[in-house]
Length: 278
Image (tube, rainbow, N blue to C red; front, top):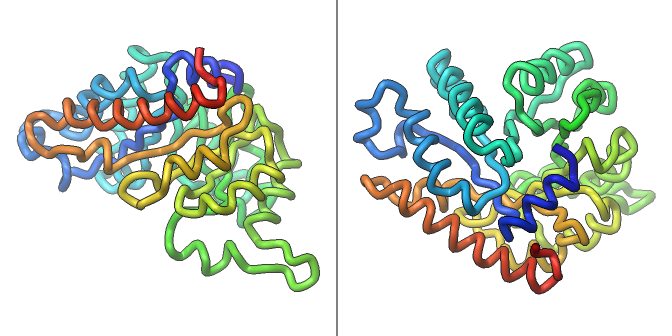
């Protein structure tokens, strides 16, 4: 999938919603625990209920890895189900990988060849040679961590160079955008840091941004859109808990669909106001 194809799907659905599949066996409806594969059973129902309103899904790998082999099987089944039934969906592996080049090459093979994800979140700390192996796959994206939504983001990401006054996350954006291009690189920018989006857009005006932190973490969709939208939308706004755990009863999928639809409707209005709907 390329940027234009992603943008066309955004216009068609009137949505730039990404649903995070942070599937926790302690939080899913308890009756699903009696099924042969509770994680997949939950994901399948969530996907079917929310697919009309979203353009992307983002499984958080930690939730699957924590369940060992069974978790990986659930993840593989989820990916296969999406590919078979919703081929227009942009699929992100939220794995936050980042290691020396030959190790990154194996991670790239795992997620882009074996698992058929469209994109993978990657940490930039080890530099260009740790990121380059992911950029060699046509139609695949690195989503580089730039400015995250967690409280600890202030520990390092806002550190300022004494000579240039450049913040560390700004340097990450400025330097790393030269490693790839808009067709193979995106950036993570937390919704709780929406006030920084004007400066971020000055650095990366045409890249897509993956924006977590809307919903349970308190980020404002209106603020993110105000400062982050570009002429191809340029945003994938992620919501996880607020959608997938909207209910823990037998109506969990219905409530998830309602929550996703409500978010999509707000996004549609924002896109329409900028002339970005079909």
